[in-house]
Length: 171
Figure 1 (spheres, rainbow, N blue to C red):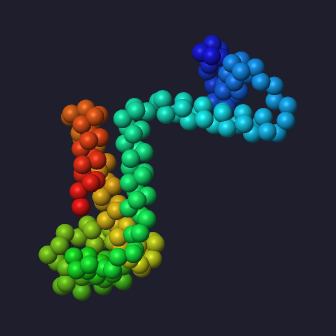
Figure 2 (figure 1 turned 180 degrees about the horizontal axis):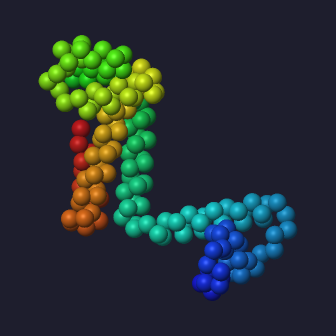
Figure 3 (figure 1 turned 135 degrees about the vertical axis):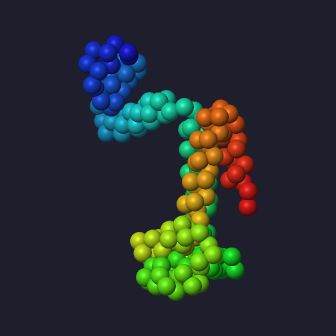
């Protein structure tokens, strides 16, 4: 197998895998079912080749982050708006409408990053509870990723994954 890659070096993954499958299994593609099955094998081998380039800890973290994101987005707009969301949603609404003076009078004591991001989400996605709460999900996911990267550099991959899972489990 390595000799195939070393001969030309620029062969595509699917062509390489076609050679591997033909050499290893000795299958002759005769009908459509076999072709579809072979395409699935090639796709699986391509995924394995791409995954092998990543560190396994980063791959586990990526899978965790995708599952966590899906769970967060599941019923994001189901619950009613809570009291602590109201000032930021109102600040984002004022900024999205261009009412900067009113925003400064109402929300001057809060740092503006969350409100500005909420206003951007309102402008791009639309004015809804889902788009407002998506800002908090975005900041939460970024925080988990930053903790993972920081822990990875300082304490190693295992501790980084544990730290990010612990942060994600906090209410």
